[in-house]
Image (cartoon, rainbow, N blue to C red; front, side, top):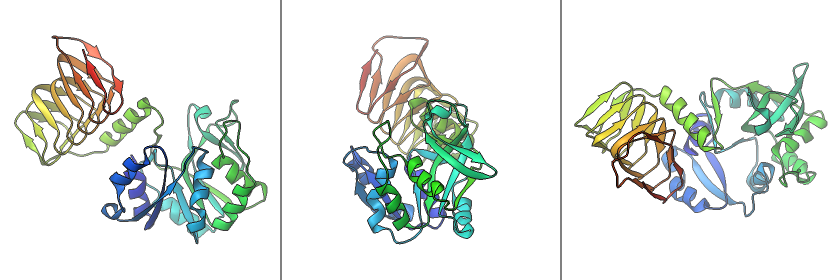
Length: 320
């Protein structure tokens, strides 16, 4: 997930990236390293307690010398952010935000517009005041201004320092707060269902590419990465990652992603995500709308039929 924002930042000309980490942050550090693999330089900031996005931003402020972008690591924008970064810099705004219309505004910070201006931001409103969600990308001109704004904040009813309150400080003082609407789709992945929706959208935009070994059958838009082995059947759109395995008695149906080293030895999978090194051997059972964590194991000792939906975390083990 976090690679998508970092790649988008690099595409927009950002070369230095600060990643705020906390609980289990060492896993992110191990994965990203110094960022050179993604074309950026990465340094890390430790957030001991989850006190909100504005608090996370404040941790990096002492190291910032000019305009900067905040891109939440659980967001994906289909069109990236290059165009928006250019508009922010060329428009000489103090703050720049992105907006998208959503059916459930209570899950997001929302913006109220009047006469083409942003007049109010509210974090996860209890009462519907707008259907314009604030997308998890924020741009600021002057770190010192942001530090002054943060120093005036108080925790919200959620006990967090809200980024919407941070930006409201600029609005209330008549500063230049620009906005635009996102291109194409945008996903804020905060739930297993949201994660699956992101997989569907990404696979919809993937082409067909086979670099691994196919001994079975591959139909449609399927990516088979180098080192993967397919002995069963795969129907696209689908992704079979490096070192992944689809057994002779297995069927990968539409909108399935097998990440690196995942194994579907037997059974079926549809609209599901198997994270790295997950193992599945379920005979005639078919997994649907499922998310299996890294190195999880799902096995059946019986000849089960029908469908099952599983959402399990890393290192879990399920025997059916």
